[in-house]
Image (cartoon, rainbow, N blue to C red; front, side):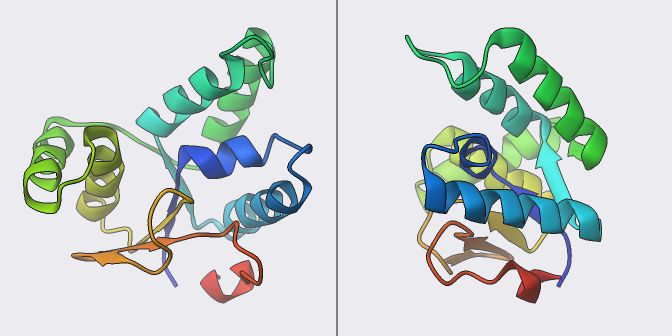
Length: 148
């Protein structure tokens, strides 16, 4: 298989040991993808990751730790920019496929960068939207090795 775009929720679970099963699956999926050179992340996802890790009364990470982790993630895999064509394709995704804007932007990032799979918990596992398949690496029985 080719490259895989990793969504925010997978990165967040990879930093939440309290959710033991999802934590283990997320850590393995992200690790295998990075080691194989197939992992990709968008600038949007890195921003969402920092926000998710630091918000609320009991944040998962402090701001400095979340920023440092975002830097490590950015160093570990290619970061895909949010460009004008991605924004316009996301708008099409909202109109044509009824996606929320930010979900459409992740889909558009994958589609326009010719990435065939997004690892996410946010969509129906196995759903294909045009050339992009949504895969839930956090579900029981998921085998990340088949993606490398």
